[in-house]
Image (cartoon, rainbow, N blue to C red; front, top):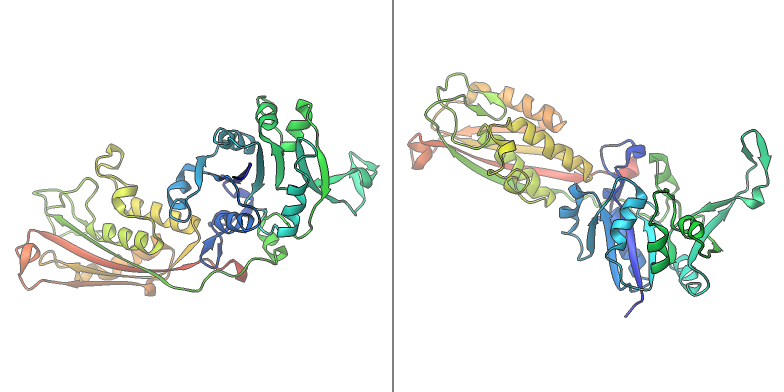
Length: 374
């Protein structure tokens, strides 16, 4: 049994990345970056446990990729690390940021070989440029660029972090606590992804898969005895009734949401917006669709096209189809030509034919965001 636990910090909002997609969800083939990094490290060292620290919004989706331990992050890197340490029982803990994507086997082994030398093993890079601090040139040989991963004695690190002082890495906290630190020369190739431009400096990452991911959705709602009817984001003026539903009952958008979620592997509309949650009562389904679209882009997906079939004996929707396409295209942030809306009757068969309600099927196609093209 290994005496080392791996903690990967992936709870950041990627605010400096300045893109819709979070950097932890950039795809390497089919794998998101956080999963790629975990697998790469695990191929060198079999850890007792792998802990991934992430935002609460990401954890449920992450669980579809791996059987790791997932912990909700805090407001700071240090708070996130403290949350993860509550799950660590091994003598040693290796901590790294998922943005440090290309950690070679040789680099990691150099760190692990030093584990008995001090309380913290810290890789660093030398500084070759002239360094000026507050208008004074300082000795660059005394300056170190600190990297991760860092290996620490677990009990020392836990004690060192019982303070209100914020530290930007584990070794600084340990030294401030009175512990020891050993420096080893790091690796220039273990570059950290902070800004978009950093992607051009990362050589070990393959492009995302070019596969198309497809999903379908189906929904049905019965007519109410009163109210407004909203269908595919458009108000149907001729109708004097709406739909029986917890939200506004837009059966077309509900079907489309399920198709998008299905293509991404994100579950279904009921998981995201439960119909027993009062905060969604009467909500505009366009807002629900917008939230799903934002989630898709955050998780590294792009919407290729969608196709919607409305099955209704009433109302007649032919004159609304173009407006429906425009409304949906705007929310999906794609061209109108990639949104198709069809309408049909059921030849007076079934509940639709009896004019008791409307049924809708939808199909959606997604691709991964190709960061290689930036």
